[in-house]
Length: 310
Image 1 (cartoon, rainbow, N blue to C red):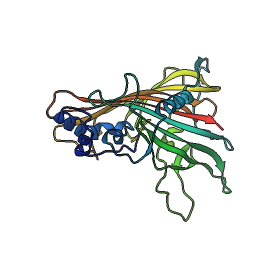
Image 2 (cartoon, helix red, strand yellow):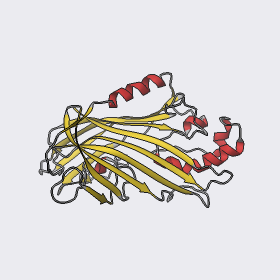
Image 3 (tube, rainbow, N blue to C red):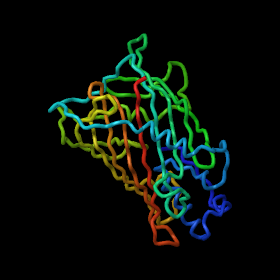
Image 4 (cartoon, rainbow, N blue to C red):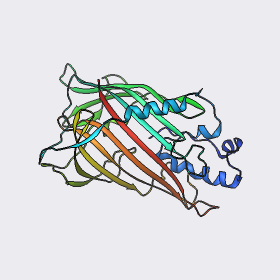
């Protein structure tokens, strides 16, 4: 959901993907803000061929779709329960982030129903205990790439280092060393869920200040939706949704433009350990107030995170 690459309007025009020059300028200029919410590779449209030529896009796309296409079946569960994070020391997982993204119709070159690009992040994660009896999560990416029909571009891999203390996760590093510049910033928020005090039950709803996608710090509504078996893991299904009314800080938007984001999804936590098993998010980002057109720029994205027991 991060690492979006932007090029200038002039670079975009060089590939002549649209006949109307003004239309290109209007939409790409506005995309700088909108694409913050989706891992769209603008390199795909600009002709910046920094990656390796990709001759297998459709095959790779289908392969990753198959990997995250795990069976999810509704099941019965307890009338009341709690969901604290209980890290299973000694257990390991592989993880997969799969993010297909669709450009707006004005600049999309993909067939209907297919993504223009997709991002993949794969790696491993394990839980251990230090000599001082501190529980830690360690791991990292083995692959981090963005795929387009034209080429595949490697991205910087991230390392995972978290400590578990007082029921929560915190960034960790070895004493006497500096924090890694490629430190992962997502698993701290994704692996567990801050739930209200007391017993939980189906239908319980609450609002929290921490969300489920970057940048995380925004009000989000949660509701216990039920129980599901994801692959072979018994989980609690939590629905969530949020509206981010202003994602413009740090973005280059023209005067009069606004960038909003709406997203919703389902997240599944292991009923026994409270650990993330799967998360699905659908989102829409919209830029309004674009000069030269009465149309809004709308970017759609879908993101799946799946953990597989090692």
